[in-house]
Length: 234
Length: 250
Image (tube, rainbow over all chains, first blue to last red):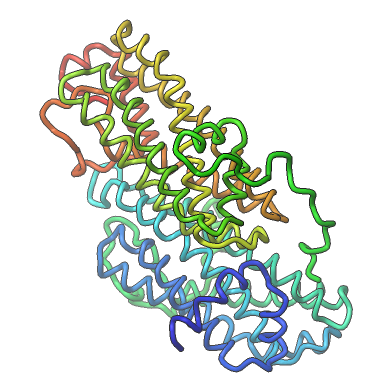
């Protein structure tokens, strides 16, 4: 896909331009899935690069690959389930269209994150290095900042998704139910995918690595349970 | 229609009208203070819109040069030229960093504007902020010649910056509404991001008002602005720490 074919939809996509999205979501416009995937790879890749850059260029490249991978893997793993849920909940949206809906929403999120990448880069370049005495504090600040920005981009994109679903589903109520079901499923699976693909920020003192030595050992929810149990003194 | 589009069409705010008197430098300066939305109208609708951002940038640079000179007079010496250079470079760099997110956030807010219009709006914000800072320059000069406290001067400049930036952000909001913004939450987040970047910039480019001590920039030591400010205030309160050379100057 050439740049001229890709770039014009960016503002229209963010605005939720009806003519563009009608073409995309009806499945009549060829290449819309590819455009969304490309936007996710570029936007999330650029933002992921800034996340990992604090620990050096190697980690930056790792996270630039892993952040888009988390989203794409989550969408693929949940694709069939999302399509079935939307049909069962009466929205009339099938598997392929559900994939297009979700990829469109994540493309908006990726564009938002990509646009914030220069600011995130500026912050990383001004953060005390991980080897210094204040590495723990810097790590916390980076963690909070990036989490807030990613959460903001996620909220923005999912608000757009909710609007799209309510307008395109058989009834607005069915659209809302489908949105809640997709959200729950994506959060459940996405948390585990991101757990497997960790680290992202790189805890100071630990080696830079693409994946942990035991990526498939344990799961996100076990880790949360153990953390909560430790906190409560069990 | 999508939910955001269901709101009734908004009436353009007062002042969103064609720019009268042309895009000359003096008229642009005049309209910037009196009818800033006419500049936004010009940027969005006029065929020859390309010159206006350049003129706004010229106003920004000239105004910041004046304000920087006054702020630099606190430490005098090399800071007389270093402070204006750093203020101009810092603000332009901050704007450049925030421009992509401003464009995307205006789109998310439902505005159908060209990139040049959004860039021009940002230039108008910078120019307005810079001109307002010049208005505060006599106050800064008064304190720079009478005060010896670096922490107080830093605090004063931050407060003045926040006041002026507040007017600038208000212009962005009003301009956004005039261009058909349907959701303002994104712009609030952008405003916060812009403020944080502009507050970090003086720490990155330090020293600006403090003594240069032979170094133009201090990029090797990376600091968060809040941590750095707290350290500077502590140093000022504790003279012992100041005598041991902990004060680096901002």
